[in-house]
Image (cartoon, rainbow, N blue to C red; front, side, top):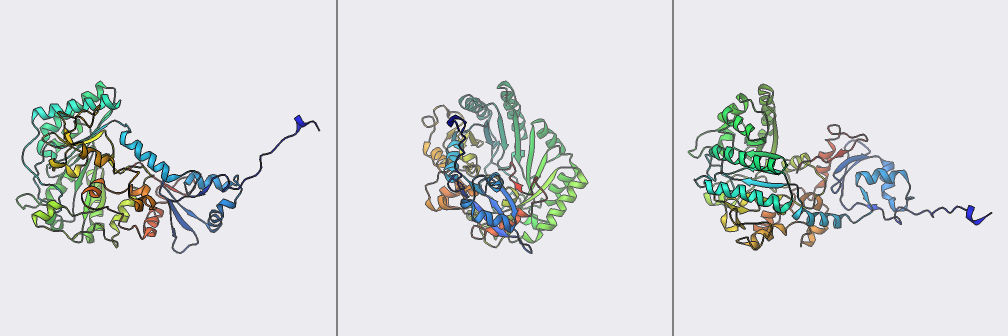
Length: 458
């Protein structure tokens, strides 16, 4: 036979020889009353059930032929990989610091508040954002767009209680919307409000200002809510807030947050049903979600305590919350890890975290002076900028680097890491509860092969 007619097949390799290995970021849990096991992959952001045959094939993965058909299925779900996932997370973390998806501004038009909630992490003070500071905010947004090459502007209205300064929300929104249009980009906004001032006129104003979502907190039914969500003069707020949600025609989504603690956790199901009823009666898009509350220095100084759930191993609240916002690994925790995301208080001080907007001592600069084209020379305190950015992955914490939860927690809240202590996931040592909570979503968000994939929530 002519040598030119000879064909040469590549020698067969095992999956291990081809570089495939079981992911370091798998969590598993036996499915009750069945023979399957649910496996969640935290890097890819998927969860699916696996039968005994699939589990066996996974256990002998590196001995399989690299062309075995199960390889593609496992790889698509992320439970096996042919690359260093931790190195990939670290690369994503570095990229997140300068990644551009537009400019993000958390704006506090006032730090004043009409409520006095015992668990609030802020010290409130009177006054609104002056016109010259508003000018600085718009000029800063323009500098950030020019320096980043971005076009889009995303605004979160915060405070204090931002609806105490509706005139400023309206004025700044008009100017920032015009700036985004001038740059050929999109403008979007959200607001965190206690809901007490959410009248129809206010709702209409927010709609004109392109607010697409709002967060309103309700801490339980009636008196239970009023025990922690009370007016500054001690007055009740439950009836006013729920009447607003029922009677106003609200064109945007409202996330109803339940700050869960020992004093109100028993009302979670009742409150969720009540919010569902409010949504049905009003036609408004109201969505309940629970979140464990955390302590704060401000609350301690006021001498008021709430028996907190945050960090308690036995609580199901954190499991439900985390399962509800399941996502693929990102390499960064929040906007504190991105140069193009800043918080601005009513005096124009800049912060990297909204939990610090009432603390000018850890501000890194001002809206008047800071120029992101030279971010350190124009910062009044560059260390207050870099310390937040440097909490992104890669983390100088060997325990975190080795932890299976790294793609999900990404080192935890930067503010807590810097000023308190590393905040690990409360159920870190009991992952099966989390996996089964994810598994419960199969059927709600089922893909073709019965797996749950991560959504787009942060």
